[in-house]
Image 1 (tube, one colour):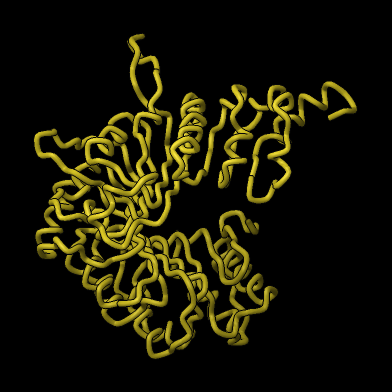
Image 2 (image 1 turned 180 degrees about the vertical axis):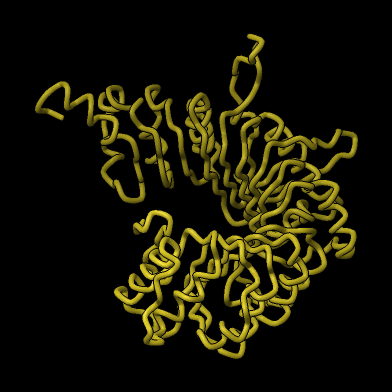
Length: 426
């Protein structure tokens, strides 16, 4: 940057783009004069954890932050400085990760705890509407909240003032003091939700009753569930299914984190969700009940993604029923699962429209064998009269299996991903 002015212009942006205060320990020593010169180049600020961190960032030139992660300070003055930084960046801020302190063990004490409340107003800014008139709104597209409290009216205000907010993550978030005199807001722009089942169904853990938050997510398309425990106010699965149908008609993609009780997960998938098209879950929760719950949605399922490893052969045998039964599958991803080719042959796959496959086959571990296998598929597709090698190796058996799927394009049989239409590794 000191060599020439042209190089300075090229490099000042990348050098100052991201500040990670958990790693850049010396950043708190930066003088105000330096921030005055480079502050507007800061786009990402991660891990604002201490008072020194936030005090260093108190400069008028630090006003163009796009992405920020911050700890919610309990001291009122420190919290005010945090809110000042967020408010100063409202014209550019699109991603915010805001974390509070652990809530008290007794939910009744939430309303008396200092420092866990977030003022929805700090995320609003004056914009100009298409008609030229001023409008209040936020540029946020992604918001993650951890151990935060809202009043019900405050949370509604946040959603109402965030017209482009698509991704919302809630972890131990309490939304208190529902007042039925206020009209329920039903038109939030949230399309992707990351939250536990009970937090959405029972947002107020206190003694008061509050409606499910699902009413506010009419545009919801994907729900990543961190836990599947039913809330204390749970009625029955059929009532929840009707609520989902009425409140979130676009919800088609489900993702489940690993849970301790697999039966709760399989029961929820079977009884509560209507016509899912995509389902992601952990191999740690693979079971007969989970597979049968998936098969119950075989008419609509187009994507099944299995994360983590599973080495138990007794459990794995149920897995072969998924591609055998779900004929509409287009994406089957089981990157860490190793299939036995004999079992695959015994359970003929009905998913002839498969476009993407990520799986491993026992005996096909060597990278050269995998490349040979996919090369045979590639050649056979272009020259159908070409015969596969006469030797019945694992490579040729897998090649023959893959040739059943005319639309198959993306394949991963190990650590690399290949595009059969391009014959190149990603």
